Structure formats: C-alpha cells, structure tokens
Amino acid sequence: MYITGPVQGIPLPKHWAPMPRSDLTIHEVQLLPGSSEYQDVLQKLQATVGAIHIQKIERIQNPHLYQSYMVRKQKMDKDIGGNSERQLFHGTDAKNVKHINTQGFNRSFCGAH
Image 1: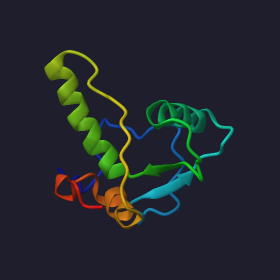
Image 2: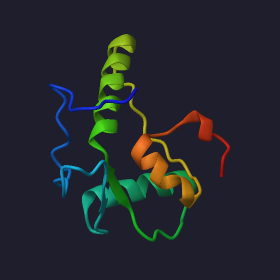
Image 3: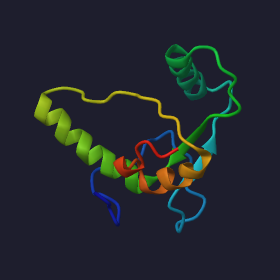
C-alpha cells in the first residue's frame, strides 16, 4: 500500500528531525553514539548478532512509509487485541538500501543479495 499524501490523524514521531525540504521523500539522520536512540538500537543489535563493529547508525525518516505502516499496525493490533509490533534486523547489499528506504521492504527482493 502506497500513500500519496499525509494520512489524517497519524502524526509523525516527535523525535524525528524536520524534513530539510518538502520535496524529499526520505531523510537520513545519523544518530549520535551518546544518544539513547543509538544505544537502544546498538544493544538490540548486539543481543541478536553479538559483538560487532558499528560504523554508524542512521534513522531513515520516510513519512509516507511510516504512515502506511501505522495504518497496518493499528489494524493488526485491533485484529489480535494487542501490540503486534516486533523489532527485527535485516541485512542486505548496499545496492538495495536506497530502494528499501524509499519503497519499503519487498518480498520480491527476498534472497536477492
């Protein structure tokens, strides 16, 4: 599901940085190593894959994908009667990152490294 405009009633996260320009689809925000968001992601990643060297952690802000996600999440939460959200980590080749950031995950990419 692709949303072409803002969804009424679904605000963007308050901790997101302002989008630098209104014509941008995504905004990549590098997290500071001392920030709680960085530390939270780092701890969860290390609990999954063990000790690894992290070059950087970025938050990808894509308002359209976020709002689409929230619409689906609200429906799933209602259907199952609780919080359906889980945080998972996914690796891919660098060539796929831009597509994922702008279009979201696509099962047709499954197994394409």
